[in-house]
Image 1 (tube, one colour):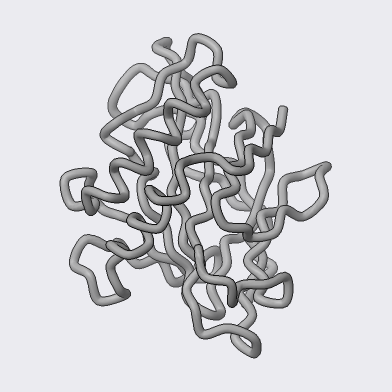
Image 2: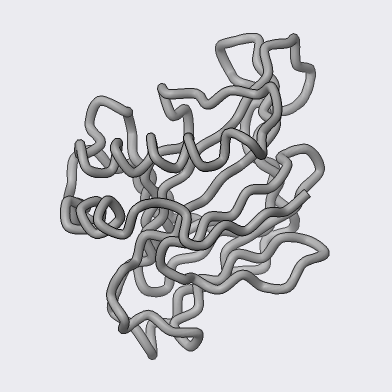
Amino acid sequence: MLEIIKPAISPATLRAAEASWPGPDWSGWHRYNNATSNKYGSLHHSLIPRACLKALDELADVVSPLIGDSFIDYDFHAAGMHMMPPGGFLGRHLDAECHPIKPWVRTHSIVLFVNTHSGWGELCGGELLVDGELPIPVESNKAVVFETKNTWHEVARVNTDVTLVHRKTLALFAWKQQECVGATSATFATVTHQ
């Protein structure tokens, strides 16, 4: 199951979220920079700017009919804010299926593209690649919802020759309360990015 929603949330809410977006030196980022990824992820929900939390709330309301009896984790474990610098990427992987602390199984992964300026185009890269689907380009206020289990996906490299802008996304994960025996962290395929 793959669903694309456009527009996903109020344009005013999206603009406010991007206006409040912190830079790369923000103390609330966790930096991933290795063979499988080059990106930033928010550390804790209490640090996320209020405008971004409002956007995440609106996104949760919009996707609720698509996630069945699953629920959104408002601690945003590994979700929340994500950002990729020019040259950033995320290697082909499966998302963690099990919550590392709670008896929850992840059912859906949800991504909202935040970049609102008109300077982001197809040549900028950063497409979301979900197995069996066409590449999904970065497009302001587009949300992508897909089932977590057995869904390989990746983010194409942000083209440093075309943009100096960071790729900004908000992410939610949906869960069901049940014992889980799968992985508690992402599983990456063979490394292809250098």
